[in-house]
Amino acid sequence: MFGELALRFVIGGLVVSGFAVLGEMLTPKRFAGIFGAAPSVALATLGMAFVTQSGEYVSAEGRSMMAGAVAFCLYSLVARRLLVAHGAPALAAASFLWAVWLAVAVALWGVFLR
Amino acid sequence: MKLLAGVGLDPGRAGRTSWRAYAVRFVFGGVVTACTGLVAHAFGPAVGGLFLAFPAILPASITLIEDREGKRSAADDCAGAVLGSVGLLAFGAVVWALAPRLAAWQVLGCATVAWLAVAVALWRLLAAVTGEQTDGGQSD
Figure: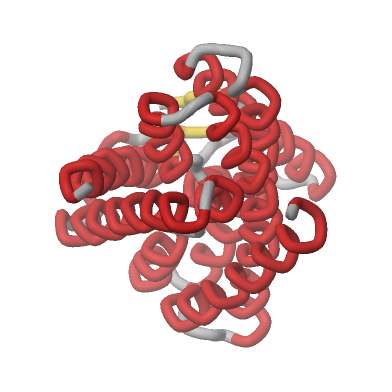
């Protein structure tokens, strides 16, 4: 179990860093922002799930991921609003909105996907 | 370097970011990926799958951009993440539909292409609707 977690940590860190570097190099900023919502955690996690689990297991993860993606969309919209309209500090806004992301993702999953 | 119409790629920009910032992203990405595995192990793939679209990079990115280029640029980065997150919806849908039928590399390849295609198409559409300049790739 510890070995698998360590492997997940390394693969996840590398994939997230890779997309982050790519995002840094791109212009304009609005286009680069697309890479702030890259499927980095998904690629790392699903890549391992394909090795250790069945296709049906991976499919179920993909289905739930859609609820997480809708929550991410809302997260980004509200974060932008907090920055532009209310002048909120980016770190505070982004950290606070993690709770909002979790609440929306779980609610969507409970209503539509459970 | 012009990557596609309206989009520039400047490898030199990556060097402007400190190693510490990259290290934070590496650690955070690693922790989120490990936690996603733990959640899936404890509660099953239906709950674990939610965290595949967790905003892992964005908080670090917009904090860094706010410090370096100001709030407006950070907000633009968030606007891009809106488009990317719609792409994540397509990514999840492709995985959902194809995972039981195709090999891992085919599923993840198709899903990644779907993510990028949807996000880029939305970006182009938004630029056309708002009349934003996309021909120089230097608007930030």
